[in-house]
Image (tube, rainbow, N blue to C red; front, side, top):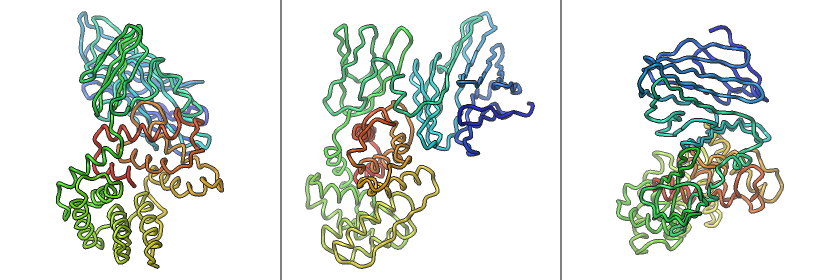
Length: 469
């Protein structure tokens, strides 16, 4: 491969590499590396670099594939697969390899697809890739750009095409969704979803469907479902969630938690049970109180061994419920060495308990974190009080935190625990920040949808505890 010359794409510099990947940099900071890769059965040829991009050929027996990136006013990605055999063949498909500095939104839904990179620009602009042709799928964390399995007809050709461009923010991408796309995909238990689909068919397992000729209605029990909408342009996946309200699920979950051993439970479990007591969301308050008391005693006994922010929050909350000021010191001990958003939030709980119980010693607020997502979560957390009183401008990190929940667009961005943290932070924002200048939906709706998805997906106890912190 000859020496690659960087390509200018808006504010970014795109640098081709010998393995066919491209690095996207802004102000000498790499924000993403991406490329198309075929499985090991395929044999790659050397990358060919041109003035406007790069191309690479791959071979598997009588099948050839050419990957082409062309960068000018936009970024076009095309993949052409050709079968030279006189009969159909099935081959392993290609995937997009993406390593981004900030979690990228990935929506690969069959006939529709979108990948959005947040480049960390102060004005919130994003690099959005949209599927123009092909069939994509997101499975087990991998971004497949072709069907699995991929069957090519005799002497046939398959074309895949994507287009990338700079967009003002995530919110402007909502107009790119199919016209029938619902406003909400995470619904309340018992709620009916109606899709205006006069010229399409809908299939789904475990969902109740009815069609009156002009629209299709769907309803499901609490859980996560996959419906498929079949139109003349192809089949699009529609993920749907039905969930209980948070308080209802808290009551249901507390029954399961109380069946465990309080002497071995972690801080998140103790915190959840104590919060359920405070919300009157337990059946059998005496049993729950005894569980909480025993759990706190064991957490206090281990408070000097390992830092546990949830243990600190649980001990501080129990100190307030019982008026036991001596517990505040143990709560502080549980925070020793803790970092990140959980430590910030737990420290606030411990400080509040100290003030209300007249204890002088309080823990400091941790202010550092290694992970960039955690840093932005903390930055928003620590700035919201000043933002709420309009003593400070809304930080750019606030809008980035919203993208961790998808910013109102379908798809996957972050893992459940990170999404629960984002919910916990955004839920504290003042109401006047409910606008759609950066996201496709209002903040309150964004948070509600995220909570419902986490509940419907039966998130683990640590993740659920964040919804109560």
